Amino acid sequence: MPGPKELDPSSSPRALLGAELRHRREGKGLSQEELGLPLFVSGSFIGQLESGTRRMQVDQAQKLDEILKADGFFVRNCAALKKSKYPNHFAEAAEAEAVAKTIKQYAPQLIPGLLQPEAYARAVFRAYQPTATEDVINDLLTARLERAELLRDPTTPLVWAVLDEAVLRREVGGPAVMAEALCHIAKLAREHRIIVQVLPDSAGAHAAMSGIVKLMSFADAPTLTYFEVLGSGRLEDDPATVARCELSYDLVAASALSPEASLALLTSMAEDYTHEAQQL
Image 1: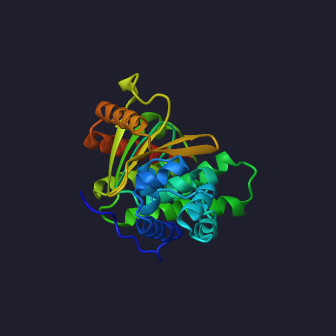
Image 2 (image 1 turned 30 degrees about the vertical axis):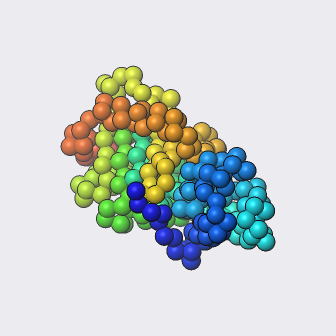
Image 3 (image 1 turned 90 degrees about the vertical axis):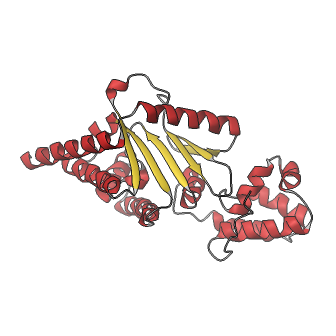
């Protein structure tokens, strides 16, 4: 079994906290499980804090300062984690996404954020917040496009998206925006940067009809699943819950079109949207 991943403490507040937590825990001769008990969290959760895949909360920082005799170190530095460009309910998920080894997602309603080009993302944010100022929309847009920068790495993370056919047919921003969005996804697929499948309407009932499925796996921490509803979301590492989500994703992927057939459908629909836009 590989040893713990070495973090660069200067790379982020989470990396700093994780490296210091590991150092102080080992200095006290405590296992991850032993440290987790008084915090009412699992040993694997402590490991996720140490590896930087989970965000430390203030109440946890207070308890860690007390147990590890850290003289307020964790509380002071935990404050830096609260400064996020993302909405509160998504900040921890975005941070985990940035260090994930694989990201698998079934999208029932809209293109996943990582795969959204600018015009599509702007239309989504404007629909969410119809009375927001342009500055607010621009800030949200900047954060979303910065998330997508992780796709500049040619291989990591492995991104595998299953898009419901409804995603392709919902005209977000109009036909020109949809044409650009589908061409963008098709380009990523042709370049072998992502795996994309389309779940056709003809698939009928399936294992993820209740909503999105998003799974993130890591080199040195348990797999996480992310649940989201309007204005709220949470990460979950409960093994039974994660296993159920993994099964749901696998069943949906098995019912979807092959990557080749999916790419052909994306290309065809992009051409249809382009033709429609030219007629306007």
